Length: 375
Ligand SMILES: Cc1ncc(COP(=O)(O)O)c(C=O)c1O
Image 1 (cartoon, rainbow, N blue to C red):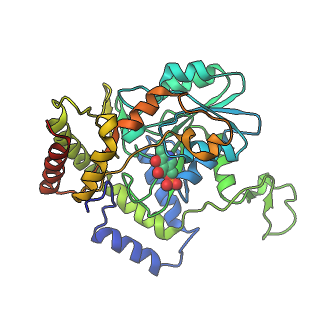
Image 2: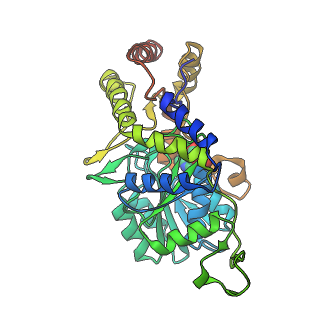
């Protein structure tokens, strides 16, 4: 079965991890800062804080943004549930706004209509790897005293108008899960251009421990002394995984180029087909495509999905609208509230897309899709 996504690990990755395993530091060592510097470079120089997953990155971002019970978060339903779940765990009420039917990204107008004085953050997802207009979302958020969070789990290494994802949004979160654009097995990062938010993020992911002499409440306690001023968690990414991440970043550009080639091949094969809709893009975007979301006729989606799986093409569906999950249904969220996201979901099938997919395999996917969909 060709999976819809998978990691690209070569001998240099194996070497990097082996070296870290032989070093003095399995965690809390020098590879962490080295990895964070490399992430910062990918994100156009923003502060980078490594964490243990994309989910942890979202949790840390919401805490850094000061999300508290009673706050509202405006976000997209066309996402993995973690985008909303982490804000709900921080006590926020989740307000879903609809997506742009061409790209699947949160609609700026829909987000604007959903903002209230209680909005603490607007969170957009760079669906499939296509960056949202972070400057426009920043402006919308700031106009109502909120912050903009860009869930860039899909878009590590993407650019918009020449500007890397992570440079503009108040807070950006990355995921390094194996199917993503680069991997640390499990891992993630929060990046931010704001030093104060970076400090909050770093404290929360490191158990809230304060070590700097000038910040201690009891500086004369002794050289061993450290203090907790606000509670935190342990979301530290170990050196062993940071070493993998450093090496993956060195390969990120080649990953993006290969993902684009496969994306182009799929677009060329499917763009003229009456019953297929290829993924939309926007001017100025250079996406590192994480997914290839093809849309088929809604009433045939399930049959097409099952037939392709039966033929060894490991398609996936991304995503069930977040508020369809029983946890939201039980809170009173109703189907029908974001019709564009629901229609996108009903039609969507993600085709295999990862750098190691060979040209003959790409051809195999195309032939099988065309055979199953028919003309
Ligand atoms: C849009 C989005 N946000 C967040 C996450 C969570 O990332 P992780 O699996 O690294 O926790 C994912 C992962 O699938 C995702 O697709």
